[in-house]
Length: 179
Image (cartoon, rainbow, N blue to C red; front, top):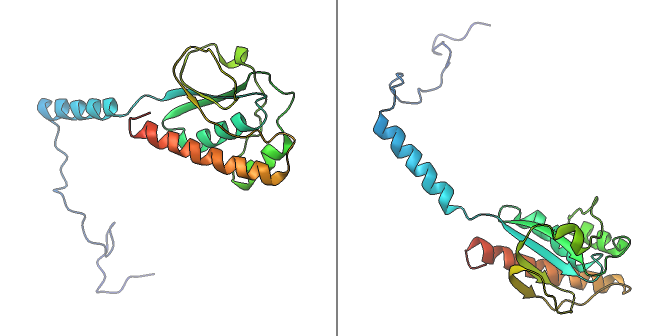
């Protein structure tokens, strides 16, 4: 096919030039140093990820919910893990069901005890167990969240809404530097 006479041919066709002078100039040492300095400043202004442990009794409901939301919404600011004081055998099926309603997938998760996750120190421990804990951490938060184990699905839905709001508040606090 031959283009009409009024259409300019060439590798850009009828599109306008993007500007510039068509010549690539090498950077001076000063420009390279300035770019390196700007990159260093940008890296130092990004806060390091906080190690956060969500803790409950069996690591079958509440802490799994919190870990799921933290990984989905706050992976840029925290490394989330969960554990239980007395880990259950399996995650409660309604926990997975309710989280799936929020598009949170915890397939591959399983209940863990403190001996599994406690090898490295945490910057923050979020205690939802209702029990006093004595674990080394920079900070411990206590969230009074009802244990839904053995309750109907509407209780699970209420708990997951509460935990989502608490996790989002924590994420916003960490992102603002107040966490």
